[in-house]
Amino acid sequence: MSNVLSHMMAWMYMNTDFSDLSLMQISDSFFPTGLYTMSNGLETLFSEKRIASTDELHELIRTNIVQQIGPADCVALANAYDFAAAKDVEGIVTCDKLLFAMKLVKELRDATCRSGTQMIKCVNSFVNNGVLNEYYEAVKNSKTPGTHAVVIGVVSNALGIEKQKAVLHFLYGFSVSMVGAALRLGMIEHVQSQKILHQLKPVIAETCNKYISKSLDEMWQFAPEYDVIQIEHEQTFSKMFIT
Image 1 (tube, rainbow, N blue to C red):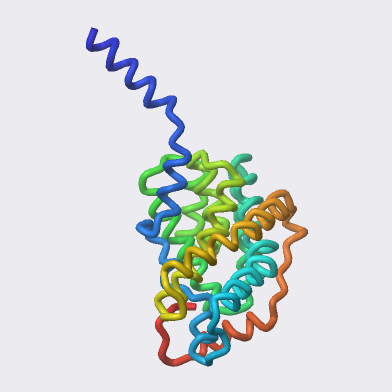
Image 2 (image 1 turned 180 degrees about the vertical axis):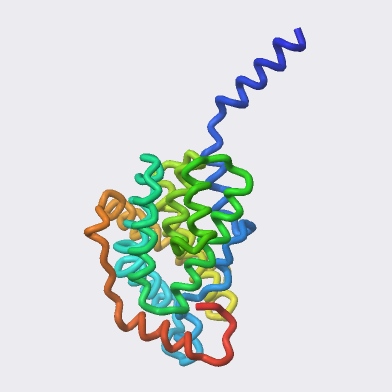
């Protein structure tokens, strides 16, 4: 009787869908990606008193999502997810290198690769997946940069997380990192931070739907003023955040 019970429990465990739990795990601030160290140029804007209100902060995040993160990172993420599903590591590397080339500011390139490398190193330590392992080896051996968005696409596929949820997770995570930076800079309070995140939900959902099925040939980004802000932060001697 005990053997029958143990077999039943083992079968139930094997057929349990853990994808939502996996999404919660990689979305948690406890997961070591280092996103909390990034302000994405907000620190410079705040120190120069060029941004102060919650409306301005909301518009800054929205602009970044619409002009950069959506058409570039989300497209790379979605395509990397599809290549991972097809067991095409070369395709994943193509996504990775293309997104890396579109990051015009060195500080931002380094930060996105640092976060991506940390994520894939961590997940690869507890997930046995051939494509994930092969891609991790390529990142570890400096054959591909390991951008954060592409890593999330590969990791999400390996963990059984739906592509749409992976893209939404990435967009929301970016928004949280900027709102969190504003909180630590003293620009806003906790209640205001949650209000901003709630107001960003429509643009996050719209951006996901718009770019989730785009091809790599359709990747683009255009936010020159924002790039200049990032460059200014890169050249700052004393700073709290990496970006």
